[in-house]
Length: 288
Image (cartoon, rainbow, N blue to C red; front, side, top):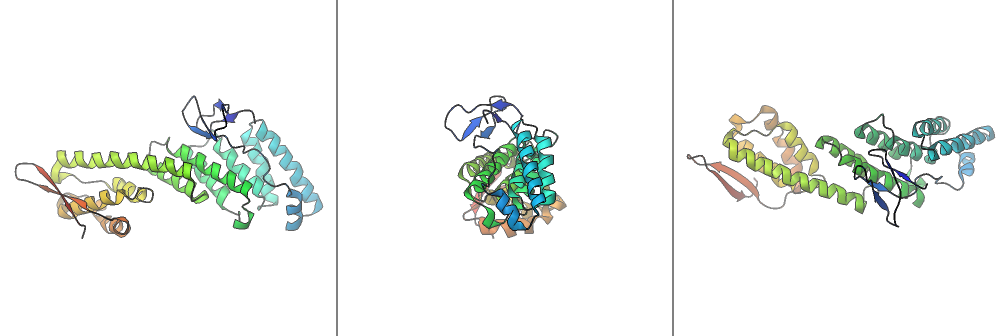
């Protein structure tokens, strides 16, 4: 293709150099410049024959696949997906159609980022066996995974971001340029949460009660950024020492937080204490 389509805003972009990624000039998203729109099997007919499909079914799939590729090249993603789906109705193991459906989903303007990510994830992880993952297929899976991560960081809700990151990593576990995005986002979120906790305790003292949503985000993002374990365990210590002022749902989460965060933690936590004159004292302690 002579141009790329941004999966975040739908704008067109052209590669300007040999870089693997292009920044969208309209929304700033990073777009994979790797060619998606190609057949990933040079021997599709043989695969259909081996599956036991009749000659007529093989011809029908080949015809449908050619039609779907034409729609794909013309950027009619909705129609292209419909045709690829009709192939999967005949032959559910047709990897090329399954991956192309995932690609079409990324450009479906009717869906929000979370819906796109869940559907693309399902296409990429269901009915594709390890022995089917050729280098060409792996390259496409990696680029779908990367593009999901760029959708994730546009989300306003960190819970949705976490879900999309998880879908991305389920498609491809290790991917350096994708993992860099996840690390940088998680680091910024950690710094923001660290400041929120400090500000709340300084302002509200022992009246502060973290809500369960805040605690759940700490729990989730500890998967990507282990430093969240120190925040979570510091809050556990704080909640156990101030039970009368803590929301019941937050207190109920302490065992869950401890079960996950203690194995991740290697160091000190912060214990907060309060003087009669309203001061806040911070002490580094081991978590017991």
